[in-house]
Amino acid sequence: MRSANCVAAAAVLFGSALAAPITDPCIPQLDPNPVARAAAVSARRDGFIYGPSLTGEAAPFPNGTLGNARTKADYDEWNKDRTIIDELIALDVQSLQAAIQTNGGLNSWQDYERILYDGQLNNTNPRGPAPGIISNATQDLLFSMERLSEHPHAVRRVMANEPLPFPLDDAITSKIVGSENTLQSLQAGNRLFIVDHSYQAKYGVATVVERFPVACSAYFYIDPESGNFLPLAIRTNVDADLTYTPLDSANDWLLAKMMFNANDMFHAQMLHLVVSHDVTESVHQAALHTLSENHPIMILLERLMVQAYSSRIVGEELCFNPGGHWDQLMVFNQFGCRQFVTDSWPVDGRYQSGYLENNLRARGLIDANGQSVFNSFPFYDDAKRIRDNYFTFFTSFVNSYYKSENDLAGDFEVHNWFNEASTLAKAQDFPQEKDLSKKILIEVLTHFAYATSVSHHSVNGGAPIASGTLPFHIPAIYTAIPKEKGVKDLMPYLPDPATAVLYLGFMASFNRPFYGSDGRTLEDAFDATTVQRLNQDTKSASKALLDSMQELSQQIRSRAFDSQGLSQNMPFIYRTLDPAYIPFFCAV
Ligand SMILES: *[C@@H]1O[C@H](CO)[C@@H](O)[C@H](O)[C@H]1NC(C)=O
Ligand SMILES: *[C@@H]1O[C@H](CO)[C@@H](O)[C@H](O)[C@H]1NC(C)=O
Ligand SMILES: *[C@@H]1O[C@H](CO)[C@@H](O)[C@H](O)[C@H]1NC(C)=O
Ligand SMILES: [Fe+2]
Image 1 (cartoon, rainbow, N blue to C red):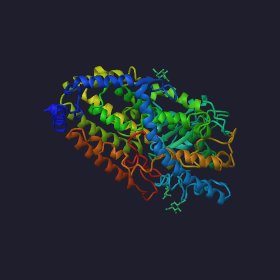
Image 2 (tube, rainbow, N blue to C red):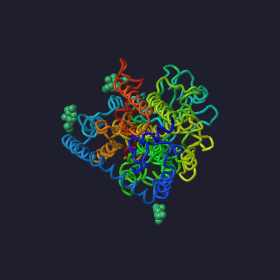
Image 3 (cartoon, rainbow, N blue to C red):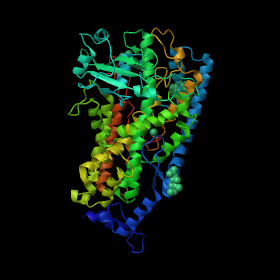
């Protein structure tokens, strides 16, 4: 029965004894041509060499004849999309420049909102900005809820037994939070949260355009009255080391949130490199060394790794090169970028710790039962659905190819893969080969697919152009930061028109608005072509996967503001993880 998967199909397709011994994908112990298969695996092992990491010290980068050929092919494939998006960017930039010129520059906060976005970016971002993200940008609830939606990877609870990250006067805290609350009482009540970007103080600042660094840490809290998640204080950690709160003047507090945004954008973009690209490339390279091209797992991994080895090359060519996008636009220079990756890989690059619930639980954002501790956690809602859809798919897939644990025990290719992942391929916190079970394999595959979809597109892809909107979300600060409070004019802190347009073009370059029409979005991950050679259970599971992703997409697309002007308790609409929009792979 099992071998029917492998051999019978081959007999039908290639019945003649003279025909090439190609079989349907199967696990190695069922392969009718074990010698040829082993030789092919061995040839791949020789052709792919683990080369040094690119962009910081993280996953190895492929070298060797096959490795280099793969990288080149991926790059060429990526380059086709780059040509398309570059043409769209050129159209949008032309139109932006004309609008700015007609307006006589960008002379007010409203100019940034209106001139840069009203009827603009039609080509690169036809979906438009996230509704409310511009009009409600100055609201505190927008800023805090971004931690639980658009920028979900940096916030964590201040645990009951840890020292307070930074001080805040009791009088100030109780005035903001009410009812005699202090940092200690919030902490003790599991209501105090922190985003700590103080580590960024050590990074060098880019000098192509003059910019001024901050390394903000920020407190957030769950309001005892409303249950809302709100901002409490922002400390800059540089120069005069001011701590701002909502009690400051509107301008001071707004500037503090914008300074924080510059640090948070740096974090989100650099972290995405680690948690999606590096994590999957290390594990996939181990698979290239150990699994046959005819292994059913390899068929699925290859699909998820479309264009994968272009990204770090592109990063070195366009983003992290001297004078590249980061030097041009962000606070910290190309060396800071690489340092972030090196520092973050042993921590955030951890495989099992990166599983959705493991990660959120470790940060105190969900409880032991997997329940969110917030009155609304939009990222978790959608990320969990996508993860669960994939989990269901991989459960069917694994159960159909391994009827028993014994079948898995006999799959020496998968055992070699697990062995190699955490050794030569340097994957962090990958499950040990001795622990391999169907359950562990399902989890590994699920997280792999989660990493190329949710981990990547929650903060990259179409997210930055749609939600990292100016003037609130600045990539850097363009005037010396204040030595004291009482800032009158925010204009000097904003990017000038030329920098703003360059920035929008750069953010748009991550977007792939044309993937919906050419079958490269998440819902099409395991489309008919991909599963064509796989077994019937997998084909059925792939149809169910499509249905479940489409259902989520429809729910996301039907989100609207309620009578309070809120959606999921936020003053903007979260649609970043729409499975009919985001790619299933790390597109750039
Ligand atoms: C890639 O592999 C070749 C051949 O083994 C070696 O000579 C070269 O130094 C390697 N490149 C890097 C960057 O390690
Ligand atoms: C973009 O689309 C909007 C709405 O369809 C339209 O009003 C506007 O003129 C377009 N802008 C450009 C530059 O084509
Ligand atoms: C947020 O913005 C939308 C769109 O401009 C608006 O309809 C809604 O009322 C705003 N919400 C709040 C809370 O101000
Ligand atoms: Fe990326």
